[in-house]
Length: 428
Image 1 (cartoon, rainbow, N blue to C red):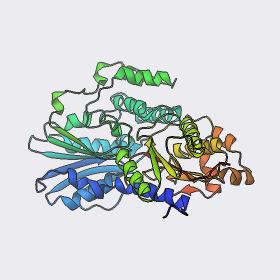
Image 2 (cartoon, rainbow, N blue to C red):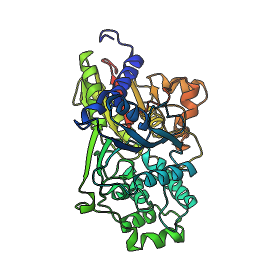
Image 3 (cartoon, one colour):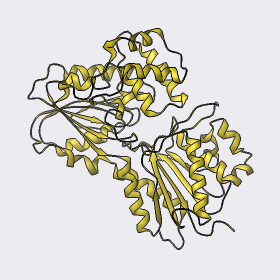
Image 4 (cartoon, helix red, strand yellow):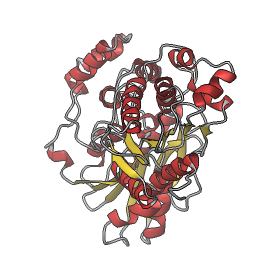
């Protein structure tokens, strides 16, 4: 890769792979393990990175290990000593419930001398699903689907999930008492809040049941009577910060979006590009964020921005999509579709947006790549980008243009990765 004649698409894809590699458990997990690795440990966990985390743990833990983790369908890999269950994501299913029950059974009746290692990563909230008393799995599935389409933030979604669960929101941590509990987490949420990552199964929860009910009302979602009754019941409250029952818990974040973005920025700088890091906690509607980023890119291209071309704008976090149409796609594809709609073929501006877990929405792609000729190529194939954006239909368009980024499951997850490349002399 050289700055004189760069291959923009190859550069953007290379930066994405750098970001993903930086968050791989094989690279980071061992540094966070206890010094004494000959002791016996019970291993539990949930998330898209669960198997890769366990695989690394098994390599670096000579002592006895037993336990169970749950990951998404298609994300498992062979393990030596720990059992794996695959379950539903982003909507929980019967296997999610089964995994949660089995994990709670494993941690029951532990003593103060026992050690539990809990491995948590993005996706864990759906994969580890046990409805609270009086609530059915079908009720939780319906609420989850409605929230995912409503435009609610991941923090709002997880506040609801925690208070409808018998295992999340710190309740798994309580179940491990009085054992020593070490949680190792790969963060996929803005701000890296332990209470939000996978809905915080082992972390104290500052949110309240009344807040969860208010979120459902805010988005005008249909609320089953059983859920309303539960959220109004004081028993539905989660353990709060300072709860003495969680005093034996040690929580460590081993990888995050910030680490991955910083690694990508270093790679870009080494290739001779100026970099602008907008943050690892970008949120909001995908199309709104795209419009803001397009305005910034256009200003830079005209020479009036905070950095000069050739440059790369990097950002992470988790945007949302309020589903209005019946199209297919994910938040990264929607971001790129909205970016294309704003840039309208401006020369010299390229972009990539993808989820570091390898799955954008419910498709088989991590995201997609945008080039200056995307707008024209789409028109030549009879696509109207504005109309497809209104229909939330990014996947078919980028598939037709052969611009999907398909990686398969990466077995890690530090949320979205976005990069905009701006080359010199992009305007007349």
